[in-house]
Length: 275
Ligand code: PDD
Image (cartoon, rainbow, N blue to C red; front, side, top):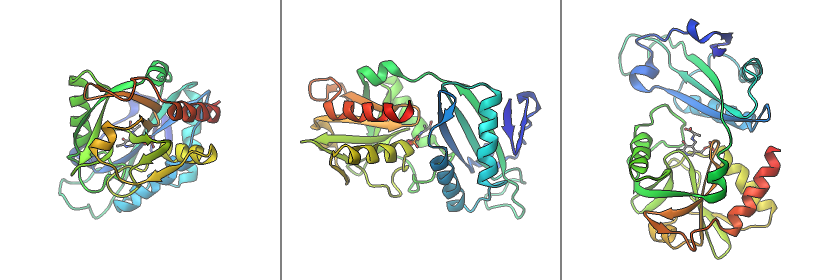
């Protein structure tokens, strides 16, 4: 079953209009929310961010966040999702094609679930990444469907046999193509501040909180490519990748090429949250 507006229905009943603005302009927003052992992780935070994304794009949600939360829980339940995720998107809906907003906006919501195991091997062994120029727009804080800059960067990583692309804007490391980026130097964790150049990740906020609790110093400051390349530890965070160590950047190993101690400490703290 899938969720269409506020109804659960069979996928075969879904009809997307040819002039849906999500389809034509990428005019919409989305969230990916993790389900662990049948329970949503951070659903409130994801829905709060969804509301914010809508507001920033002057888009109305089709119905209340409370009802949406209820429907998502029902959706995961009818599909018996154990370890998986829900993908949820809302577009500005169908209207005759003009760039400006239509007079009567009727936003369109679709959500679906899938089983997805945790990426255990990558969590344990780490991943290799490349760096590439951040060619995206200046409102990366909005979780919008417009993802071509992210798509092209991720493809570049894949072509290089890597799992993620770390994006660099005018010398500054912003984030990954679908993750936030952290470095550790001399015991201090550093990550780009939550402004218009990055998506303020839900996992990012969980881990900043966990670091604080564990007495690990964190600074939300910008850092450049040479700091990245000379870091003691590097890791990324996202809903699907959790806290994943980065062990190689542009074919150069990070420190000794093994996941670092602070990364592993934060991973262990995160594990406790999802148990
Ligand atoms: N991506 N930055 C970008 C550009 C992202 O696309 C994501 C998540 C994050 C991490 O955010 P969070 O911790 O809230 O998942 C940061 C999702 C998972 C995706 O597009 O599949």
